[in-house]
View 1 (cartoon, rainbow, N blue to C red):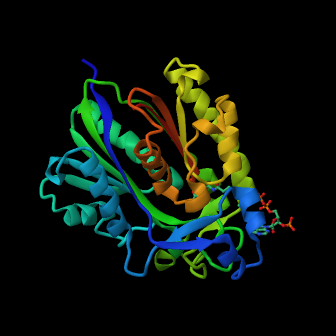
View 2 (cartoon, protein in one colour):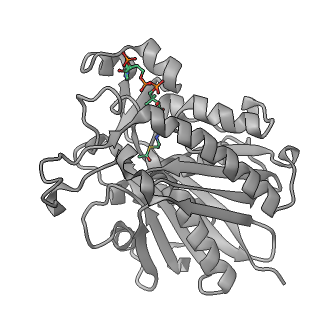
Length: 322
Ligand code: ACO
C-alpha cells in the first residue's frame, strides 16, 4: 500500500507591529503607490526585540499541533527552514524541540532561503515515505527585518517577519503527491546575505544585509517558476485544470500572476498574503497555506500547488492532495 505524507494541521504567527509603506517612505525615498504597484505590498509585520525565529516558530508549531489533535510527544522529526536562526548552533530546530518539551525526536534546520519550506516539505516527505518517520513538524520562521538594510529602498520595502508551520503524518490516504526541488549556485551574486562574522578577506567589509539585484532576480524567478509548473504537472500526469489552488511564495504579485497565468488559473484561486505580510522568506508558503486552510477556502480532497523561488538560486514545488 502506498505510504503518503498527509497534512493534518497548519499554524501561523505574525508579530504585532505593522510597518506600512507610508512609514517606510519616511525612511527611504519611495512611496506607497510605487511599492504597491511594483510588488503588491502595503504593509509587513516586524518582530519585537525579544522575538526570535524559535519563539515565533513555537507559536506557529503549537497551533499546527493543536489543529491536528496531537501532542508534541507524537512528533518524531522537526525540520525548521530559516535564514535567520537564533544562534549559529544549536539549530533553531533543537531550540524549538526544547520549547515544545519533546525529549525523543530528531531536529535540524535547513537553509534554502525563500524556498526553505518547500525543501523542508520535500525532506519530510522522503522520511515519511521511507518509513523513517511518522509525524513530522515542518516550520518556516524568519526575522527578515533584522537582515534588511533599512537605507536600501530596493530591498527594505519587500520583507517581513513571521512563522508558518505544518504537521504531517504517515497515511494510506493521498497527501503530498510529489515534490520537486532544484538549486543553482551560479547566481550567488544576484541575491545574497553575507555572514560578516565568518568573513573572508574579500568580504570582510560587508554588513550582514540582504543584497539583491531585484530586476534580474525577477526575470529568472518568472522563467524558473514557469518551468517548475510544467515539471510538476508532467510528473503527476495532470492538466492545469486539475489544480484547485496555487499557494505561492509571496515575493511579488507580478511574479505570482505570471505563474497563475501559466496555470490558466484565475487569481481567485491563488492564496495571496503579501499585501499585509510582504515577503517572509521561508515562512511565506506555510503562512499562506495556513490562511487558506483556516478561512475554509482550501477543502479536503482539493489539489494544491505550493511553489517557491529564492537565493541560491533555489526553487521548488510540492503538489498536495489536501
Ligand atoms: N521606490 C521607488 N523607486 C525605486 C524603489 C523604491 N522602493 N526601488 C527601486 N526604485 C527605482 C530604481 O532605482 C530604478 O530607478 P531608475 O530607473 O531611475 O534606475 C527604478 O525604480 C526601477 O528599478 P527596478 O529594480 O528595475 O524595479 P523593478 O520593477 O524590477 O522592481 C523589485 C523592483 C520590486 C525589487 C522587483 O525587481 C522584484 O520583486 N524582484 C524579485 C524579488 C524576488 O523575488 N526575490 C526572490 C526571493 S527573496 C529571497 O530569496 C531572500
